Image (cartoon, rainbow, N blue to C red; front, side, top):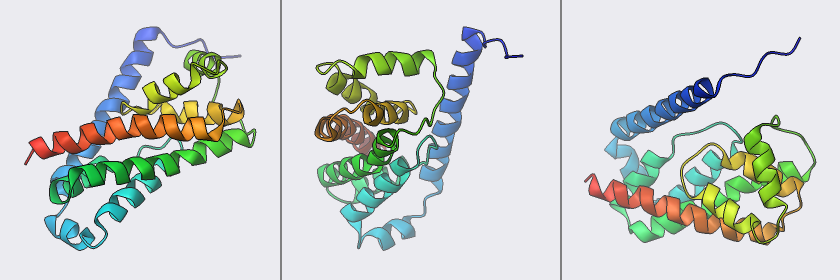
Length: 182
């Protein structure tokens, strides 16, 4: 016997709690990140931002707190260089979801959000806008968009450019908020 659907308020409450947990994890990592580690990562500077973002975004549907490292690197090195490096790494990591979708594997269940993104990505002129809009803010829903973009055959160049511009926006926001925390 199938379970009845959750009431809308419980869905929003669950999303809010997940957001709070992820936010608290990022804050804890930021506060506990030892300055000596940043000094050791200094040899990697932009490469460190690139690799941290690539690794964190390659894990489909599992959030990894990498913003604190990007913030610390942005406080230590050129913020625009860290922003571009982290955005590029993020796009590389997100290609994992795209290619999993391209392989035809069903990785997520069909939800109302899944069906909405599927409809939007099916329209050639809407796909880049939706990908940008979902890539720019920190949210766990972009993996669904990446999986669907691959499954629906959105050209990889559209996916990469839209995602890069969205992630450039996100990383600039993260880095420059971090600069204000100095």
